[in-house]
Image (cartoon, rainbow, N blue to C red; front, side, top):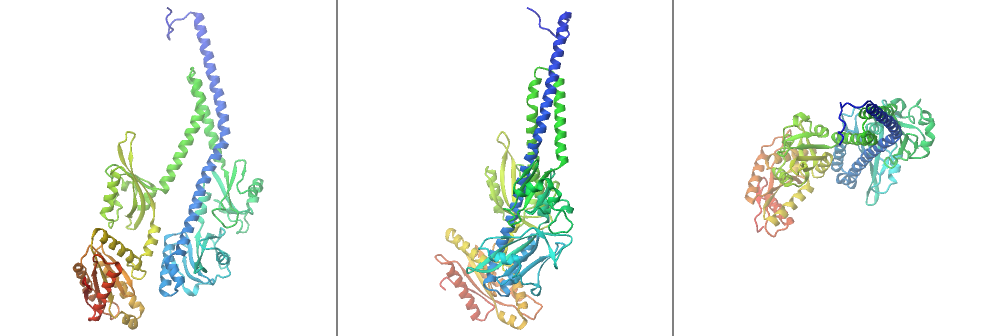
Length: 635
């Protein structure tokens, strides 16, 4: 049996010659395969450049459309919220000083919450500006405009066009430049307006309109690493471009239109809202900016981006050739079949993962902890929201941002849920490093490794500060900053339901300031407002956190005291009565109040409880004022 050939064995000359020839042929074959594979791969990669450019265009278009849609929808939501807010409706139905002040506070709060708002207005059915909030040019100050500076906008196009809309529809302006005193403001300030009509008793009662700063929105639209982006209108005028020298050709003299800048492609681009001329692509955004301008985004691949793709393809082809030449073994053809496809798919997957991670880190408020709740990582959005850097949070728990007023029961429910392997969702009240409060809507889920072992928890959150601010306005008395009648009604109903189901008692205190009309008559309404405000502050400082303090109406206040008997509530009322006597003001005023106290009874309706407290208050008034009277069960 012949012995197999081993390296180093002596071979006959003819065998050595055959081996060398065979080896050289194999090497030549391997080299030929390598060269041929490299050439094929090189050509395939270059043919795939167009596909790669198209893929990147689709991704960028999707991201920009989502951003545009979210921005416009957010603006519409705020306009509708202002128009349908009870404070606005109250001012329309009953226009007086109090309702107008409340509505002004609402519009002012909206402008404060959105730095991009240049102007927020309510215009009545006759075209007169009734409420107007302006932001200063530097963006730092927001002011309510004085009555004498307001104007009649009856003949302005946005008023006449909005007035023709049905209820809950929106009017959108063109993207243009802000004009002051008949001239375009310098430096230019791109502006976008959204309005909606308001109806009362099926009659047009006015409109809400917001002028928004469009610079950031447009800059985000045209920003791209891979494309040079133009925003043009249906007439071929350039509205926006990263190069300021090319922007606003419709409004600024001496600017070239898109037809002049890109004459070879402009005709085809303008004839169709979604066009492609070679690698130049465009898409319409009319469904988001419903201004009738026939807006298009034109995306032109940057030369450096294409050259980078070409350079990468050349390098890949050379490396593949070198590897196959060096191997020169029968398996070389297997290595040549798959590298191009594998490399392209891997690059695509890594690019997509990298972009996704960047977007998630920048825009999604998220954090991860270990099983003990110790923070291991947070997103940039989380750091920006709370004001702490990553290194300040790592190794600590979320107690760093926990608001001190958050009830312990909420966290007990949270940890009980996630430790049982379930997902918890709810609203969290937090505090920034600067001391400011913020609200987030969070989803917290357990994370497991491949073996099913718990490794920690992931929290993903949404900023709900604006929603919470509006909710607070709806349940807060504008003057005194305690709860209003609406909130008191909600708390009373909740406590009564808890009493019926779990027999958890509660009591009600109603107080009425004595001779309050004399304060207004003798010292004016400003003094009366000061008295009401100070009394409200005293009540908030005196009662427990579990108690609800609110303005019941006029000079009447109410305390809903949960888990408190009649005697306990009467003691609290007496404490309040005595502390009122110690209040001092800038006016020669002595404040006293009469108190009516009642405890809920079995089988009693809510209105009966309030009636008994009112009767006790009336008794206190009749018997000399400045006293506490408790309602008995048989009253």
